[in-house]
Image 1 (cartoon, rainbow, N blue to C red):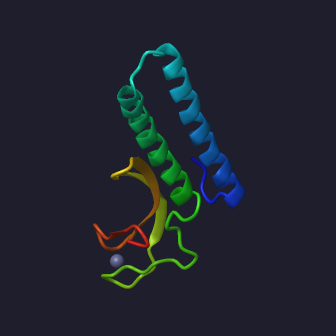
Image 2: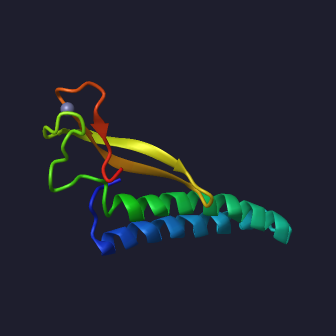
Length: 119
Ligand SMILES: [Zn+2]
């Protein structure tokens, strides 16, 4: 998943997920032509959860991953913190599970002082 995508790039990635969901659902129905409406619905619910989770990831990760222009200061010693890397974090939502990427800062002087802006 790339960072800081333009709106059209985010849309493209979003549409790709939506298309994947359609194809998957359409294929499934082809293989299960006798499925009841309830069965189709329950299958679609699973695919939707997956699509929603990924799409939200695209919308959120493609916009802001918490890497600030201004270097954050350590709460303890007020020194500038050091950008380490991006950490992945999974949020279990109502509509789907989303893998988020957040910038990760540490203080060199104070052990255990870490930050994921904006919090
Ligand atoms: Zn510190």
